[in-house]
Picture 1 (cartoon, rainbow, N blue to C red):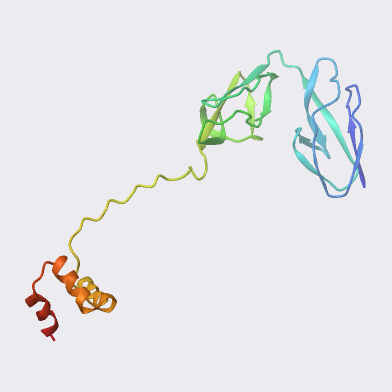
Picture 2 (picture 1 turned 90 degrees about the horizontal axis):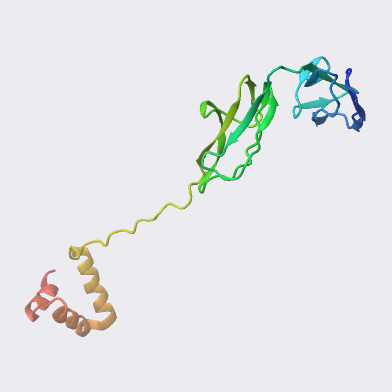
Length: 210
């Protein structure tokens, strides 16, 4: 077991230490300290490296997570969100300057669509939640949608009935043989005269052709 502790680094307040197993994948929390006067939270420092909340670190020793502070800028900006055809709301985030980690989309997708990513002010490359952007002005993140995978059932077009073109010779021979076997010569003769409209001569000629 290893201990994770937090260093306010001139800030005030406290964040509770915790113990975890070796090899634990630990997600860095939001800052819980109060910043020094004139400062605002910037990032965490872990083993000399700058890390942001929601990043994951591996715990293989006792670990101190130190708060880093920066001067409060004279101007801050707002990140807002556009559903772009979806429904629901996502509240704008104010007081942002510098690096911002894109949020998860909580809009409800239009029918038949699913979330594809964000575009900054509706332009540029498609970005995903967790990607980072540099905020130097007010920004609108516009949700982008794509067709749901699978796309639903494909409409089935009924086949047109095949136009009758008469029976081929092989089919006629099959009918003759089958008719003789099932109903006898007399029954077949009835089929021959009534359906085929043939004469006795045609009927007898059928058996003479050998």
